[in-house]
Image 1 (spheres, one colour):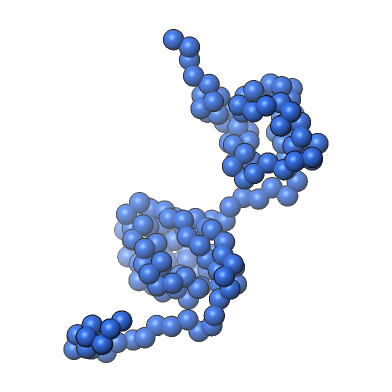
Image 2 (tube, one colour):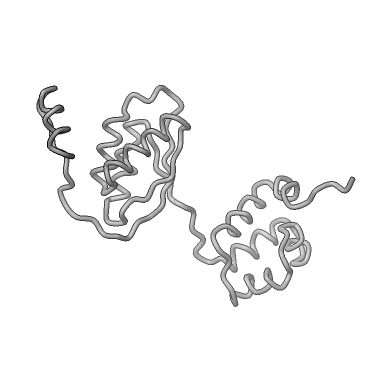
Length: 172
């Protein structure tokens, strides 16, 4: 902040400097923040809590604006910023933190979803819009699907018709 801006603000009253009490790593985790569907009255405490977890104040302010406008936002939090503590503190402020879902054993997960829906590899690959050899390589553990494919398979598991409607279109 330049000295002229600081002088103007000082005329308005005392300025409280907010700084991080420690440095944070460059490694970040992308998380989803959602706010409760009620009036968002805890914006300033939520921004301060995000800042305390290692977010730059400008990014915390932008996140709060997104939360107020649309009810959700994606942010990057330093991995050593106490993400678990942040997840415990934010609900009291009407904000909830969500981490990306992880699948420890993708091969077993994919085979399990396919078996639950009683589909052959060819039928399952077709339903997802994939090449059957790609699916076979994933189930055999030769290749690992990316997070987007695992999300698609998770979505198929919960709502197969939705995925089929997204993959296929009617012939006119």
